[in-house]
Length: 204
Image 1 (cartoon, rainbow, N blue to C red):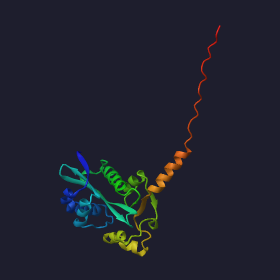
Image 2 (cartoon, helix red, strand yellow):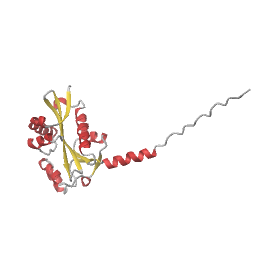
Image 3 (cartoon, one colour):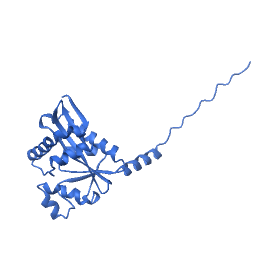
Image 4 (cartoon, rainbow, N blue to C red):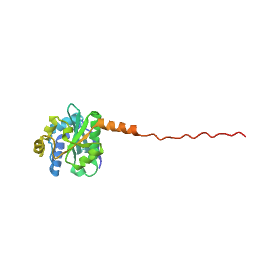
């Protein structure tokens, strides 16, 4: 596998429709819900440098993108997908790490969140420091929840007043991570090193 993962630019917008098709086909194969996105929307993310693209030569084999909500206080890592021929080789984890690092670079103070029904995605998020949370701890931006309208489970979300669905909410809070790291550093006790007394020279 000779795959490279790139931060997208306008040069990659030609793959937009292929990305949409891959996301749709992947969801159909899993039998899970999907928030549909248009090729124009995906191309917009690429043009803005808010996506990553995995290529094997010129072949599209993976993708993920960034969305921002609530005045950039929340960032969502969305649309993670890997071509069927390239699964079970660790590529999804690499794409996840790339889009996470890009999110932290572009929006260092933002809370990063994800909603998913996939166990593998939950595991990858947990490894990056995400914690499971209720939907009330995620963005209340209507634009985000409108994105769920194309999902087959949207009626479940509506019936529960947008409080819960089949997806699990996961959140990375940089403020909490920094506070935890600072607290840990303060608790570290430096070892006491006893200095040896210099050897005394006895004169005869």
